[in-house]
Amino acid sequence: MELRYLDIFCRVYEKKSFSRAAESLYLTQPTISAHIKSLEEELGIKVFDRLGRQVLPTKAGELLYSYARKIEGLGKEAKEAIALFTGSLKGRLHIGGSTIPGEYLLPEVIGNFRRENPDVYSNLHIGDTKDVTAMLIDGRIELGVVGAIIDDSRIENMKYSDDELILIAAPSYDKDHLTNDMISSIPFIARERGSGSWLAIEKAFSVNGMDAGRLSIVAEMGSTEAVKTAVRSGLGLSIVSTLAVKDELARGSLKMIDIDCLPIMRELYIITHKMKVKSPLCQAFFNFISNRP
Image (cartoon, rainbow, N blue to C red):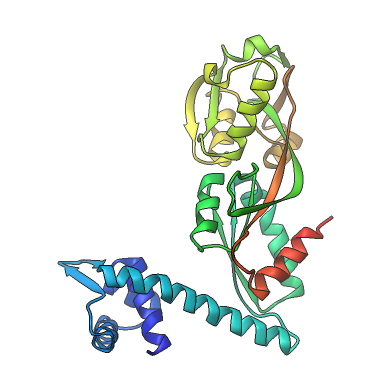
C-alpha cells in the first residue's frame, strides 16, 4: 500500500470532498479520484460513499482512517528522529492553546523556539480549554497549554505559570471599588462557559460565598479580544487575565476596578497525553517550554 494513497485518503476523509482535498494538496480532482480508486481496488472494498457532492467514509473507511493516522504519525516521527540524529531539528509541530496562553503567551514562546530551531514550523490551534483537551485526546495536537487543570485519566497536567484575573471597565466608569455584593448588579460581559477563565471565576466566587450564576450577564463573548472591545464601548464590566490587558491598562483605554474577591489567581498548565509517546519534535518543545523562566 503506497503511503501517498493514505495521505490522499486522509485528506479526502477530513475535507469530506474530493475537490477540497485536491485544492489542499495542489492536485487535480481526477488525480485524487484515481488514487482513491487504486486504493479501493488494492483493498478490495469501498472506503467512501459518494452522495452527490458529499463524500462520506464507509465503515471500512472509518477503520482505515484510524490506522492511516497512526502511519502518518510514525512517518512524522521517523523524519524527526533522523533529523535529530543528524544534529538538526526539523518538522511541523501542532500545539494547542486556550485563549489566554494561546493569544498572549505561546506566540512568543514559539518564536523563541524557532530562533533556536529555524527548520521547525508550528501550527498553533486556539480554542477554549475543552476544545484544546479534545484536540489532544484525538491526536490533532501533541501538547497544549490551558487555563485549568484537566481531570481526565488520559491527560498529564504540569504547572506552567501563574495568571492573575482582574475586573476591568471602560475609563469613564465612575467607580474604582466594588464590594462583593455589588458585582451581581452590574452589567457583566462573560467568556464562554468552557473557558478556563470562566472556570476560575466560578471557583473564586464559590470560595468567597458567591454564585457566578447570579451575575447580570449582558453578553457572552467567544474571545478575550471581543470582551475587551465590548468593555471599552461601555457595554459592561468583565473579569480577564492581566496578560490580556497590560497594554490597555498602561495606555488608559481600560481601567482596573478593585473588588473584595479579586484578584483571582489561577495556574496555567501544560497538558500532554499520558498514553502516547511524544514525538522527538514535541519532546524538544516540551523541554524548551518546561524550562522557560
